[in-house]
Image (tube, rainbow, N blue to C red; front, side, top):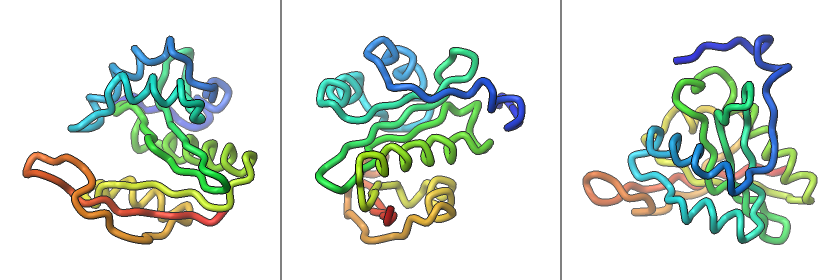
Length: 157
């Protein structure tokens, strides 16, 4: 794990819109985080569809990314990820707060996301920000033993 303090990174942590040129770096991170990662096509389709796609960088290196889809006054986080070496240091919270700010700028009233029930660290983060469990989506995610449910979470903006 790469340990950085907030004071070390605040001056160098940057958010910027994702570009097609970033997909190679993202594809190097995605399979190290998820057992069933997004494909290159998922990211390129998101960019081509005009979704709000962002990366966070430290010293010019992508350390995280997020994809936000807007539908009317609802924001839906489709993917939010921090590279393993940077997890557990608050960068996921920073990226999520940035995405919440983007959704508010676009006049969203609510934000939604799905998360695996087995991803307790992510659920803890979402709950600490104010997301609440709204429903269970049965057999939503692929899993080693077939399918895994998803917890649908929502946040009033």
